[in-house]
Image 1 (cartoon, each protein chain N blue to C red):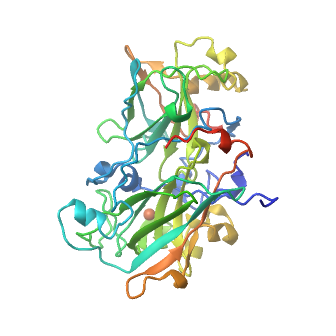
Image 2 (image 1 turned 60 degrees about the vertical axis):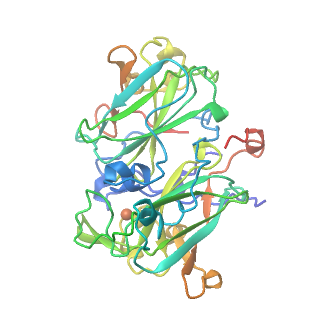
Image 3 (image 1 turned 120 degrees about the horizontal axis):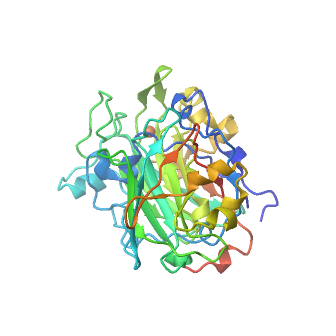
Length: 184
Length: 238
Ligand SMILES: [Fe+2]
């Protein structure tokens, strides 16, 4: 084994035509395979998580694809982890996941879902987390939220309730209310 | 191990104008990968079809057509290892690309070049137990895009990878050795130096040509490494 680790292959933007690879129906055609769905089949309380991705001018990014990774309803990960993929849909300019409410994993963190953003102009995918507004202790106790120095930015990682089981989570790539992005 | 951000382009790369408004200004919050990030992705892709890796035929076959895509026939193959040199087995690779004329099958592609009725432009495969993979496709054409006026993308294949942990997620582009557009490309050059660009460049592999059938390019990839004991403790999910 080499003593110096190899260099990682560099990232590049997913570009404007990412849908051909990630969601062909948004490119305008169908393939017999379609890897990734915005709907989870796991057992648990059903929730919907939706929102826009906004650029530094506040304009919605309409050509992005968002991926979600979360624990299952019991907080199990490993081969129980849930992975979903949603393009921004043209009618709403929103991504939209129909999933189950994640359980807390037991890593000390409150329950959350991880979101990755792939888009034209995004040179390496951005990672963030959506926490749930019911967990009112989370900003103080969650090891990630509690580490955010600029306390007014904590709210950028907390979804807002938008009806029973419905959550809204906008992702601001830049600007005054820029979302906290993670280097994990 | 921590992701070496120096191996990757910065979010803000003003030579690539779209990145200007799509790049965070605050520093990323560094945290250690936890059990979720170290989990192995499970996709239900056990049913990967025999033509999924074959872009010359997969679109035509799915649409009841008999023919094959137009353009120089190529195989792109290689091996995926982690930063410690260990193979990345059973990782999902997805690719998408323009046709031989540089046109994408996408409602938003306005380039005047023609579509190829036999070509969709996407495929997928899993690496084998030793991290090896192979796609059969056509050489994509270069295409113009608006940046500093009309710029031209070097021929490239977009490529997405999942390793054996979510923390290894990577999306990149594969360029082709000797393409004179590479040094001119603001996107390729977001990575900063020619050595890094070379890590995204497939090499002509004449020894592996398919005689009288296709040229072959080799493209090896390195995913983020992890602590030595880490992978052994993962359940074999997929
Ligand atoms: Fe492209």
